[in-house]
Image (tube, rainbow, N blue to C red):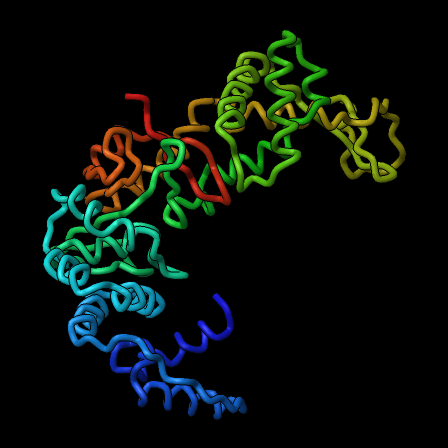
Length: 362
């Protein structure tokens, strides 16, 4: 959002339409006055756009339905360039349909209105649905995309049979992110060398380590998530049956020095001197293997995907219906209940800290 857009949004409440009408001399005077208070002298020419009252009624209806201030000028520009015949088709179909008429809404409005979106709060397809759906309201930033009669509709566009969950599907604060960060501190290539692994098992674990070394935890490809789960399964098989090594050590010269149990027990306050046998510097690998054995993902590798699935399900269940564009067989819009969406979509990958939901092959 540029500086002027932010400025207009900050004073949008001063305009009767909720946004400046460049055909309205009073609105232009308000803008010039606000700029003057900021020390900016400007003379804004009045627009020569069509001032058809039908268009103003349409814009006022959309404003009452919750369309954002930066969307309304985009709609107005399209409508004022319509021929009388085009405008009649628009008004005859304006907010007339139900969610069972998605194909019809798309056929009438998509060419001009599908790509309209707000800088925040309204994505592709949402404005078109607001124009076509009877009694619909824009959810904006506070709720979801569209509401009708108290029901919440989330609007998504599939790309590669996936849709982004946005901030609602963020992994921030999840057990998945906490466990991944902890896992990264424990597993390294020294541990791989200390285990009896097949070449294929080494390749899987190497790929996992290479990926999370290169990328931040906020990203996770489908291949990485698969390798991560398999890595945990391999480690569970290799180290969970090993007896955990008791570790006793003293700190000397900034190093941790291994001490056997008998000598460790001598280290109590007493008069005189004692003799103990010092072992080698304590191996970091041994410490990390012991901690890995107790890691939730090693105890149950299925948790890797289950923790992400819980977050995805929580997001899906927070709405009543999904309207999905580019859905296979229904590119103009597919209506799914939250239950149907849960059944048809799985965790695909993580992009910019948000889960992508992927359509399960039908």
